[in-house]
Image (cartoon, one colour):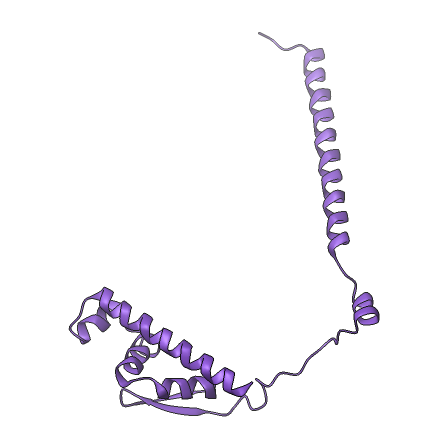
Length: 147
């Protein structure tokens, strides 16, 4: 079946009309999204004049960023820059400290840690997980003491 020139022209006009409709509705959606975003946004002028929020704060974390805290684990000296972490690691039992060292600093896999201690991989994961929980509890206690 051969297409006539009139039919080809009709297809072209129909496609152009379809494209115009799609572009118009895409623009309407973009304007609507931009207006919604503008309604949710708050200007800095409003924050400073009405609520008196400061633009910046001062943190205690960067008082001495180069201070080092050495910790001995598995006969290795590990240098940490966070004093609370060093203190919490020091308070852990030796086995838990060794497991943390092997997993995070020594880059041992769970399988390798299990083989070192004569256990399976899932038991090694359990020991890593419990060591992290103990470390988390110690860190919470230290942060509460600071506050």
